[in-house]
Length: 314
Image (tube, one colour):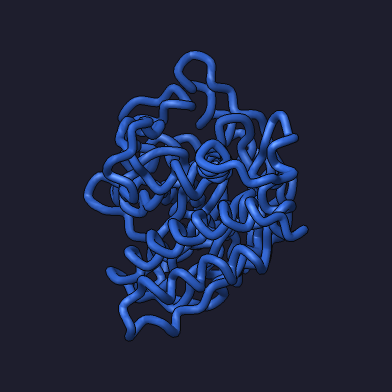
């Protein structure tokens, strides 16, 4: 039997999982991400967790395919990490450093791309070789899977779909420094921005006006309850989503679009709304593209990370 590790490295915790070759998750656990001293302890801690697990289970390293790892920043095909700000990392080769600490092969990728790979392999896009995943959370991340592999790009920054520009005349900057990015309208914070602007531009009565700290969930809940203003706001959000997803799909023509992240908890209304505008904007030949919700939750990164190293090792 052959095994491997999938590691999802976040700014607060490191999620580790142990898999068999078929992709069955045999165990999972977490360790804290120690970001002090420019994150110098992160890789030694991961190595200690991996080495300790194998020793505890009595599994020899010649039965281990390797370690796949998703990191929150750009990673090129050779394993060179190009600054992970929230970890304190600069530029270095993670393949070489983690492999030296574990004596195992390592394959790394951007965490959003890796999570998309996991969903394509075992989740909402199960078995699809060509997929777009949009993670709608505090920001908008995601990944593009073509031919079963994530699009990484020359600088490891491929798949940054949250920073396509939808509104070039936007006056508020995005967190990335540009103006009018998808993230400013389709993330959880973006939905609130759209809502507040819409409310300021009209005097329609709405339950939303009585909520002091408005959230994305409030907007969707009000829409489900039939609140007219909330439904108008959501139509604008769905229009934005349909535009940006159609633009990406005009380039890649995938089998499926998978929506994840906190906003996706809105469920079927989100899928139906986004798909309605998607069909308006998409090139006619691609109207058969399916929409689905992500299904792996917080495990997507670990599954995708293992798939990275599994593919790399053949």
